[in-house]
Length: 411
Ligand SMILES: [Zn+2]
Figure (tube, rainbow, N blue to C red):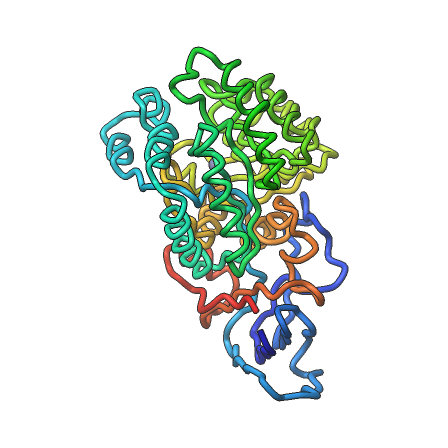
């Protein structure tokens, strides 16, 4: 804590008062940038910004860190509204299986995939899981992530799901970025419930959810609504049980098939619907006029070689789009949102401005952080990215694979 003054900023991006909580449709191209600017931060809060030409100096220069940002940009930190950052082990052997011709679904059917992660997680202690996740979070921060949502879902038993959620709860308490916790007990059916869906859904509803309420272990509830996973009706039943204890839905839908999950999630007032590689007209109609944020995960499409979400179709229908990493050991082993920014531009034809709105304002909305994150606004939390010297903002997604973030400033 203390005071930080960043001066001579080439461009102070996404700054302003009274900015919208969501940018949608044609407005996603808007991105306010103040050139030749300063930004003053005090005790973890944004207190002042403006043009260097109008800067009147500071009343009190004691305990002040001054950063000269000549040639550099300052952006709001990215918000990653969809991750599985708590997991036991990487799964590069499945990566090799896929190179050798198996599909993600075939790997899941032979015991790989989510069930593989679940087996490995069951054997790992809470302390070890916490330490690994903490290390990952330090890396994500270096890529510019200043807020993080983390899901359970590699437990798939009462004990292991609670273990994951307790790890997330401890991360919330000990990390210097805000973390949101999502209960994803309905990530897959565990093998012992393969032919007894009713049994597992009852376990989630009657045993896991009441314990989560008792120990205050989650903010959101998620279901993987997909063929071979949870049907739309099963999703509805589980989400309603979560809603009853105050958890808002954020769901995995339309990754491999459009089953009608988006319309149902919107009806249940979901905060976001995530994946959307497959979209049909009714999904678009359901989203219009709703408060649900469509969230696309292009790193997952890249890694699995599946279609990319059709961001242009959503934007052209006057809808908003958020982008997130889906960081997880099976389908997205990278949590680098700078790479997501590039993929959104290259593969989804989003402009650099649209994609940055999707990673900041709209992503903050998708994790309930609009009041504190997503823009550079007086009174919001200090969570800003200082870039290296770059010619312009588009240079960041253009230079894919380069680390152009000099540092993230969090207090
Ligand atoms: Zn996911």
